[in-house]
Image (tube, rainbow, N blue to C red; front, side, top):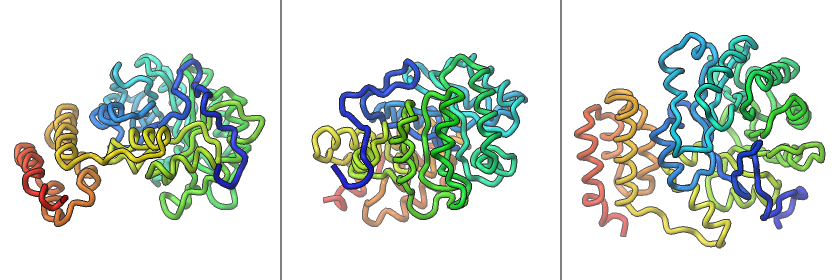
Amino acid sequence: MLSGLHCNFTASKMVKIGDIELGDFPLLLAPMEDVSDPPFRALCKRHGADMMYTEFISSEGLIRDAAKSVQKLDIYEDERPIGIQIFGGDEGPMRESARIVEQTNPDVLDINFGCPVKKVVCKDAGAGILRDIPKMVRLTKAIVESTSLPVTVKTRLGWDDSSKHIVEVAERLQDVGIKALSIHGRTRVQMYKGVADWTLIGEVKNNPRIQIPIFGNGDVDSPEKALEMRERYGVDGVMIGRAAIGYPWVFNEIKHFMKTGEHLAPPTLEQRAAVAKEHLERSIKWKGDTLGVLEMRRHYANYFKGIPHFKQTRMHLVTEMDPSVLFEILDSITDVYEDTMT
């Protein structure tokens, strides 16, 4: 065992959110705006994600029946277990959106108390609510009372370095009925800069008052890092975000390493091109030609990371708008670059 905090982890323990069984150390796909959509979730599920969340959905948008918000409610049977994540800063709309979400029949309703983006924070939503913990607790209690779904929360350590109250927050949120808590190891002020601090995540998990699953999030980008976080801090599972973008294989790679101590062979160039092509096909089918092409662009760098002399092709992929041309490029990658990978 790595040095550090005493761990509660036991390999045989089944992690559950309510009655939902997730295995002994589940890997969760983080909710990411314009990333965690059905096309991408399908690929992550196939490659080992144990539970996934939708992109976050505005409570105000849901109750106004805004098209973009409503579309994010789309979930599919082969994605289960899946959680729908909502955000907002006002109790009325959050209660009503919880009722709307329940009609969609996800496995879990998740509350976003962690998004650091200014346009969310300025409405006291996302990480903005970390400046008012009593309101955070009231809002959570109201949502728990508004739905029969298991309610979970994703949040951060605190607003800034002087307000890292996550140990107390975890207790209070558990007391009002949440069934699991995911913690990103940064403050809101940090945004995504610096290194995630898992020390307080470990303190939450090892707090004897805490009986719900605690999932750690932040900088888990390799099998070794996932194993370290499990053994050093005892978390019940890890939530993976940026490391999965354009690389859905990360889930099975972590699982294989934890089981065997060995690394899976990385996907071949042919496999990477094929999955990128399938991803683009799914994206266009779900969002249409324009948005499907645009939102796929953030994935290409990781799909083809490490290929020598790939910059010109990558620039073509992230500037081309014609789907037929993009498919031609993806079809040609194996032949063009295969010799560079030997």
